[in-house]
Image (cartoon, rainbow, N blue to C red; front, top):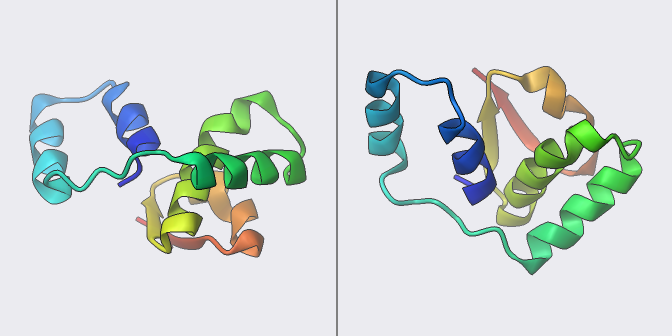
Length: 92
């Protein structure tokens, strides 16, 4: 899981049971946001219309693309536009 997505998850609101469950699933596999992720996020931000509110989504999508990881989300609509840039999206 991207450290950016981990941050966003913890912003909540969350119930303690949800936090414990997700912490078990993630189990220390939080990937730091790095320079490659940042460059890709900027490309996505600029390509997707430079909407200020989309910055977090661009960062999360970029980390998944650069890590060649599937992005699982309940907000598939927010991330669908990044599929054209190589995002492997799994709606849950």
